[in-house]
Image (tube, rainbow, N blue to C red; front, top):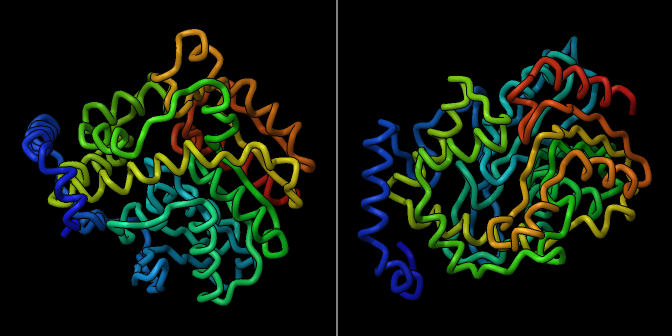
Length: 342
């Protein structure tokens, strides 16, 4: 149950939530899910890490997938999902990494997917990195390569900055945060305003956004699975709590840029960039002039590679925000080659 303050905040939109949920369900015939995505199956078994953070008990869902012993290369990759993604979204990449001998750890960060959705939490990339480090300590893993996609690229960068001695390599796949949107002129939006926007999300809108940004206005039936995963939580019984956590993490993403610290990275970095990506958080709130300058991944990848002391850039000129899903064979070939170069 939400506390009294949050309950008062949402009571005026209760009818809107119900209507949106019903409309989304009817329009797409999707299955609904609770706040921890119960009933949505990942391709690999889900484990649970129980820990205490900010004076509350939390549960982090994670995948720990190991190759057969004779193929193991002794290296571990930690996969960090994006804001509209989950650990399960990495399934094709996990399969490729296992085949190459890597152990793979893929957490659902607190506030996302199958992990706890706290009513009150001070979300920060520092906190999420610390949570991930606690999980790795729990698993007695001392050295990892961290690989982050979208928002996960920001988190992976923060992790590498905080724990350089435990980080072998940093891999960023179309990370957001290659530019500081607020410094470039995107107006701030409050958490309450973020929350109202999250409440309006449904399958139709999610698919339209993913088609234009993730897949360069193309669509394959396999992509529907990831739309239904998200839309099912927004249409489910815990829609308010899901939306609230998404609103809090949106504020984290907008107000905590990592781009200004790229020069401080001490580990080798591999950037895998689909150049047709146009992601820029809050772009729609900016002036038309500013909008034209944002989300230029054909330029941002090169700028990031120049700012990071030991970076290798691989660009996919025809791919969008999710090259690992859009063109998995080409993407994974580049990924494995980059990992072997360490």
